[in-house]
Length: 114
Length: 111
Image (tube, chains in turn yellow, cyan):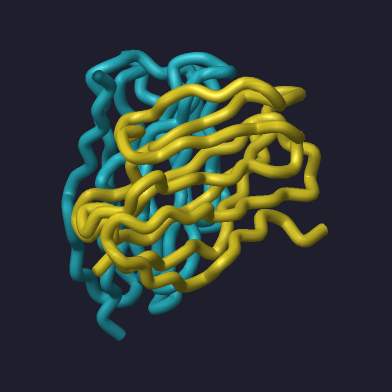
């Protein structure tokens, strides 16, 4: 298993550009989510999905779109990048069943908007 | 909305000391999670707690699900240099709800 794979690892965007951060997992996990991490603010939830075709907003969804057409993939789209979106973005997936949770994070995408 | 608070914000301890940190919520959770993040990496799940009062260990780490269901605690015994990192608590209200994170406790271990 590759776990949770995020691409790209680093990205520089100009203000106003759009792009998609990719996230894929090969563990057949139903739950996937995107977080952004800024210094001193922990991980803030952007969007999450409890299964293919189902998405919902997290704490800081503005400026981001997601879709979940397959169980494996959960891309995050920045519609019009702003400097305030400079951050480290993490994708996570998890499975709950049999009284246990298995949860994994990707390595992160470091995004700079200039 | 839901909010998690962690204390302390940071800790500097001597190798061999025990560590205690906690997490409080404005909402009742049915699951508490504790993660560790090392520099340049994504968080790694350490311990998951599923019911009030539960006490769970993972090696030198012990975590407890608070009786009120609004708090959780993590203890690390006999700290070692590789314990350095940021420790996050996270929780969710139901099995299909979103998972939100606290702001983290930064741990530094002085050899």
